Length: 99
Image 1 (cartoon, helix red, strand yellow):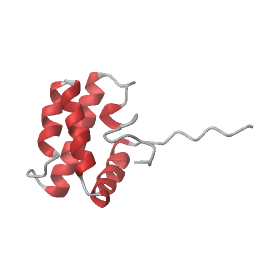
Image 2 (image 1 turned 90 degrees about the vertical axis):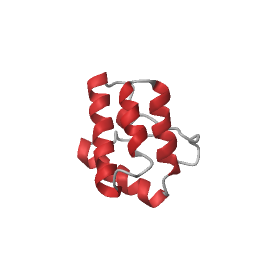
Image 3 (image 1 turned 45 degrees about the vertical axis):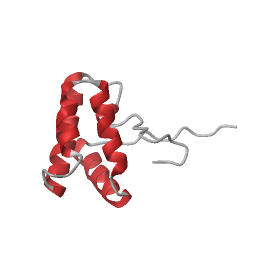
């Protein structure tokens, strides 16, 4: 997370991406939950909020962001980098500064 981002600022990626429909959001939640479960086990504090977030309630999705923020940085980076590869995330190129 960059220094300018607010805590729990999930940005525009994964299940928080605004341009995806509910089926894709659900698939992304399940992918992230499966990944965390496989890496850390079912007792990891992020597994349950991810399962609950499948309800579709925005508050439940925010709880996932809070738990993700609580993860140690090294673990969070590991989970998110593997998750990005799993869903085929390709970052958009930065626009050129033409000033």
